[in-house]
Length: 288
Image 1 (cartoon, rainbow, N blue to C red):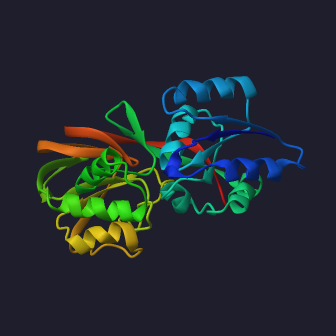
Image 2 (image 1 turned 90 degrees about the horizontal axis):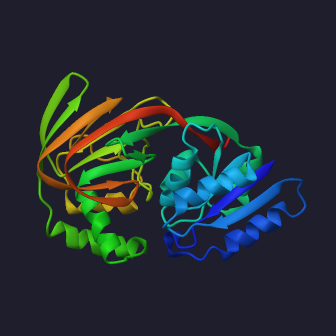
């Protein structure tokens, strides 16, 4: 087999030398070919496609966090080439969701012993995709603050929470799911293709990235302690404070511009959001 490793050197603010060395040592006495290349954050899509054309891999492996996985997945959509994960980022939400071991040895083992599963992705506004979780409102505002101030780790997130709480505002939203139009006042609306945020906080207990649908999670109320759950608690949120609607497509309108993020990357402020499921669009290599 031919494995192609796409390494993000800055993912999670962690040095990837140990991961690169671990890959080389692991395959040193195995009959597989490996190729590694580094992402630069500027020409990644073109670079990945060029590397795939050159090496014709049996599997492409993202070495990094959720952002890295998404970059590689976008290049592999509808190709049938499986995507493996070495969780070398900070939160590693997608790896956690799929049960990928967090250590080098364990995650490399999955490349040889795992199975292929066709995973859904969410098409967002026709020009973007979401593998994991996207949202408008409070958390997206926190992501913006986190990126703008170059914060790292849970302490950085906590500082962001305190700052964002000072400015939190409710949104009036209109959400069309199928033939139903839902009018709500909320702090946050999440498009969930999975169960939990990268920190382990469960917001969509019945989420499944392989079921041909996603969930719209509406946070009607959100206290300081509820927000802290996004980062330190692994129990589901209080169902009295949230609503969850399964969907294959949605249209969201807000009365004012709202903060918006996709898979942990801030996308700006929007008043309209359209999303639809793309069933089985990317093949994932996951534990059996």
